[in-house]
Amino acid sequence: MISSNVFICGTVRNCEQYLDQVFNNINKIAELFADFRIIISYDSSDDKSLLKLVNQKAHYIDKMEILVNKDPMYYHRTTNLSKARNACLDKMREHINAGFSADYFIVLDMDDICSGNMDIDVLKRAMDKPDKWDSISFNREGYYDIWALSIDSYIYSCWGWHNPIIAVNKTKAYVIDKLRNTPPDELVECRSAFNGFAVYKTEKFINCSYDWRMPKQYMSMEELLENQREVGHLYPISNLDIQTDEPDCEHRAFHMMAIDKNGARIRISPECLF
Image (cartoon, rainbow, N blue to C red):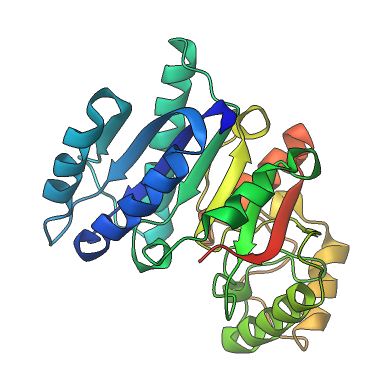
């Protein structure tokens, strides 16, 4: 057992069919730590997700909270996700101020991405080397989460270019090859990665926030131009040198803010958790 407490956070919208399996994995996680709190941010759904969550809460009593978003925006998918994830962070801060401290928090997707059988030993091995990371996410077959990824020269959103499929495919091929050639006991450095599941050191991220806007403020022009060369000189949707409210994956701003404010080390394990 890990001597620390942990927060386990997720966002739910239309996830009914996956929630039983996801909570099976959450139970595995909870058993690793001294104590835990589950924080779920729920958004208006067309299925019985909320009923499923209420039924799960009955098992955990005061160790699980459901935060209901009563004012969904639906401007863009990541605006709601940013709001939901920030609500989880706010609730974590409330717990900390009330005396429940946790060295770590885990963010996981509550749909099919985290409904498969979790290899808990992979998570244990990552938790055994906390001196090597401040955030750690994991590989999976066919590494899918290219939108959240900023790695080496591929720092900009893959969907920030015209003909984005070219950028997606080039970035995906790059990260798959890099993870394939990394020994299982080593980690890959990056600027942002999620891939459906990540562990965070609370002290490095608790003063940060998710943002759905493209975080160009954390990228130099040299980096952006290098990324443009890597994807075959595609044209960006917005000028690279102008800060706009262009929608982006909410994880990128969160990770880059933590690097900028707290020197956070974002890493990917080449092992597959699912």
